[in-house]
Image (cartoon, rainbow, N blue to C red; front, side, top):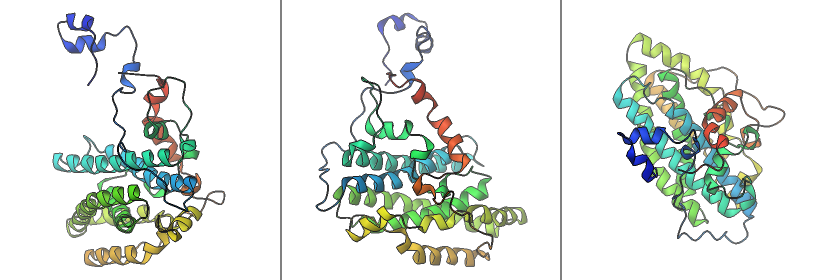
Length: 313
């Protein structure tokens, strides 16, 4: 909770006290009583695994969740009704929790990935990774970056993302790294609900009014533009998959595609024929090559933290 000095209790309202802090807004930046999300957990690196590889892999999955969580949170107060507003906010919070654990694991595996901050900064490793990397330092898939679009675009994107992520997490629950395995097991339970939620809405829109179906048909080409990125293998994916620690996304392509095709068939729809977005300068999101949408998202998400890197509240 926010700390309020005795002098601030002299105000008629506690809110007056919060607003009158001599122009110092830094108390809103970071708290001072964060608990280490991995406290008490054995973070020993599995035998034969390069700590840099493990950190890079955790950043990949963590950045996917962090960026998409922020995107979904933009629906707060903007969803079609209160129930969907709450549902999308809860999904965003689930992904944010996964991101925090994965970024913390990355920092514990290889502290060199954590951005250097001014001495005395209260920022924990996972927050430093979230708020003090530029867009080129993020390694999320481009699939999660574009603006939300309308509700149909969000439903279609969430269905694809949750189907893909669930397939990864279910396999990752058997990782030789017990920390990753535990994160994946918990995350799989959450993402199962995300997929079910999106699937129900996908069918509802497809079978609803002419307008809802039209919007869904318009959404599919937008969402599928970065579909191929989800299954592109990075060298880190391949190495950790061979070592029984990570999962090569290419290995889930057939399963994910079959599940999505079943939903499309039930809805009377087909995969859009449009071309996929190709690499940028020979790379994709996993290589730090991103869309302009990510730069705009990070500018908003990181603004307070960067303005007050030593802020406490």
